[in-house]
Amino acid sequence: MIRYEIEKLVEKAGNRYSLVIGTAKRARQIKDYLNAITRQEMPQVVPPQVDLEEMLQGKPISIALKELLEGKLEIIEDGTEAEKSK
Image 1 (tube, rainbow, N blue to C red):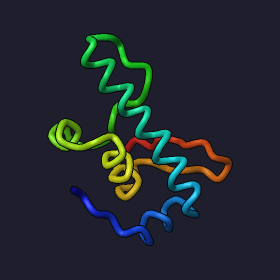
Image 2 (spheres, rainbow, N blue to C red):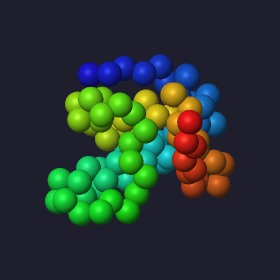
Image 3 (tube, rainbow, N blue to C red):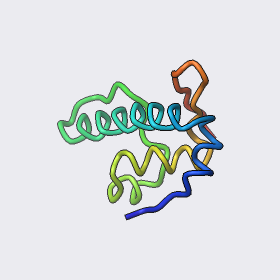
């Protein structure tokens, strides 16, 4: 199980509510992406922004939190999220 420091995550997200909502939305997108790949369909969401090995071993919520910590996911104040390609 991967452990993250909540203070660092809250600092990146702005507040705890935004952290929970933003990472939950991103985790759903990641799950939809992985399900589409499994069904051999064309995914309609942005793929996970982590290494392939981490993507296959991690759970969607862990991947979303890792993206946030690495600065690949930005949670915007109005509740929507924006992806940054780095």
